[in-house]
Length: 262
Ligand SMILES: Nc1ncnc2c1ncn2[C@@H]1O[C@H](COP(=O)(O)OP(=O)(O)OP(=O)(O)O)[C@@H](O)[C@H]1O
Ligand SMILES: [Mg+2]
Image (cartoon, rainbow, N blue to C red; front, top):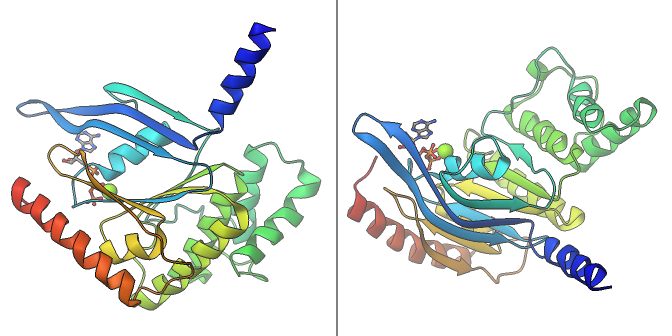
């Protein structure tokens, strides 16, 4: 009985966060010995929450995301996630010899979806990212924005509770990026997935997030957090978005002044 209760408590605890980062530090070997890149980071992402991780170039955002993804291990501290996260990067990383549809099907295959269901599911995911009819298109036939949509569909194909995104729209023009912000917000609301989104663009961070976490540089530490209580969908030009962005930019500038720009 006691064990059953303990188990129940454990399983409730397990769904309280999509990601839990506890006292995580990371060092890399450098010319002058070990270089401390991340210092004692503690951060939770709640189920269904949208968190943006903001910081100057080189402050350790990608390093932290890679640790959460399990691609590397922290030097100290622990990271737990609710299942295996899905990842999306600035480069789409689609297989150019496969069609849009087959790229998505590959992700479905890797997670054990039976062959007979893959085509239908891939078509549904393409519809979700508004690429209906692009199943047979090859990567070179797609625009940059369309490729990122396919990459998003492929990430969603993994059916993860947590989506990790590392500047996925940074290489796109402003208008395409705007459209994809809308799409991502819609998909987030529709699927209930948790998102940890890395960017150095303050406006983008505020446009998207329920919570913005600012990392300092050298070493990366959680400098400050802001709750963003504005209703979605927002526009990047909205006055409250601009106002909060200004406030955050001032703090970010202070951080950069203090630690030197990379
Ligand atoms: N594998 C590695 N080996 C050694 N140093 C590394 C390694 N990965 C990252 N670093 C160093 O860690 C620091 C943080 O890098 P990281 O890529 O995480 O920054 P970032 O915040 O993502 O920057 P950007 O906004 O430019 O993408 C940098 O000084 C980088 O040189
Ligand atoms: Mg990076």
